[in-house]
Length: 227
Image (cartoon, rainbow, N blue to C red; front, side, top):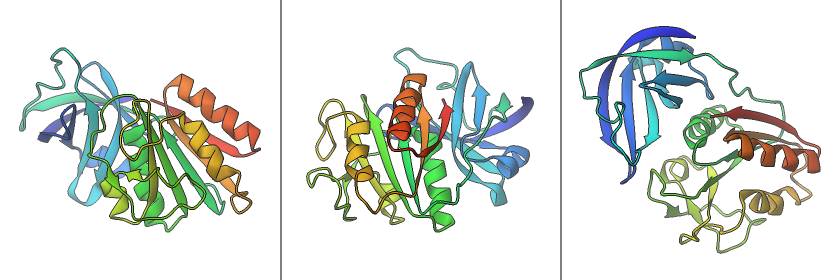
């Protein structure tokens, strides 16, 4: 870990229960990779967006029930961060990449999904939540024939880039799959055309265990990062 003073460039809402904080750091923005985290105001947060040419990076985080010191940070303030230079996702030479994340790992996986798209890598992103989403889900126009036809909810920023994505939610939100994310992944993995796949997963320890079981069942490589 390394400690650095960074400036808050912006702090804004992303949906009713999430916020995005933009920080200025030439060092971290140049070296950050999908999966890297920052320790800030008592919490550990994955980097979800980065712009090295402008020396900024962003964290996406959920609001707590009680006010926190992170939520109280104002634009223009300086704050100490610890850069957690942990293992990050690295692209395996496979034909397909399956990205899985729960709500804790969503930010890290959004970062990685966009990075894969920039490298023109084929992917399917499946994200799970028990709470609210930081972005309003939209119906997708990207057809994924292996998945149930009623499962059409996606994240707008991925849809705009042409990235195939679907959402699962335990409360049965419109367009979302209402069972476990591993069940939805099974629909896709059982297809004969999806044999050369690497699974990438981010989230809680329990979510990592589910991802490991899924990878072992289909004899696939797995990269998991705990968030």
